[in-house]
Length: 543
Image (cartoon, rainbow, N blue to C red):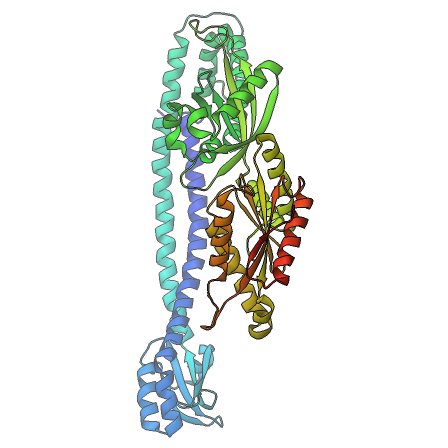
């Protein structure tokens, strides 16, 4: 019994066989062309390879005029079946030796070969000098024959392979598609009908498996079509929104985190983990930690921001320092918002019924740049001591603090003796070294975090001592230590050793003034009094 052509599986088989034949023909043609060209190119490359192997030997033979050597070499080349003729010419273009390939010295063969490869022969001792040329005529007939042979074999293989694949594909389609569809249609047909609504049967599929599938599906689809359609639409929209929010959350350049009322991490994005010094594998570790106290350098500041957000009912922000390994500090700009969460566990009190949402940006580079700019603005570029303006500002600040605490402040005005002679004799570079060494020695001699070393300009320095008064024995002791340290020999580049003296004027608050300007002026006058009476000493300002 013949299978009717309207059956779907028969139509699929016929379509696949026709398609396979067309594909086999196109694949064979393309494969033939590709293999032919590749084989032809390989033959040409083989001829070039022969030249690469013998060009130096031919150059020596052409240079010495040794025709026996040249003849031996081109005899070997002519044995290759791809070579039709080999000529070696001298520098004037005269043929020195010639050898024909296996086809013999037939002019028709040479003319038919057509493809000639020439290469200049360089002198053995001077590559810029040409001693001749070698010309190789390829046997194009041999190249074409070999290329056609390889191409024919490949074309047949591709044709057979395409046909076999088409048959295998048909079998797979029948087992994987046609037969399962028929089974599904039988299962759907057995379901009880729920409604009279019908799906239209696609045109041309009234009597095939597709038509049977549609007729059987109408029984089930009519009863739940509307509900499924609405549910799928809603689910697709929710999934799309969730995917968009998840993509924004994960790809955001800002760190996003959520904390519970105890400061425990509820959720965060990869950027937040990276800013906090971790990676995605550390998320459980951070969830088990008290983020506020274990991550931020000032937990009280973070708690204050949370309290502000609770009181104001909005978002608050500030720059926060993070704890980290080593001395390097890391900073973030953090926005904090407290949200009351409905439906949280019932055992929590009303005060606990909230969570903290935060967004952070890494501003470490900005903070570092600000600190560097501030340091450059307040410190002398050569010695590292505070510059004039920063020294005067620090003095006024110390005086305000000292007045509030009823503590004295002392100002030492230092001028280096003999510095100009060093500058004139050894140059400005040596003078700079002296200034740097003296400033360093001043800082080491004080050894007090509350004391300040400043450079007013040239070889004039100012030292501010907090909590040290005119009657304090420590004032004289520190002054003597400073002078001894500064006056010690200084080794310059090149092995030269120099020494400077120092004249020091001292003024104390409140005895010699209550403002920074008054104290600096009094200390300066005391220093000049030392200069006029012999230098290399110290003196207290006149009351």
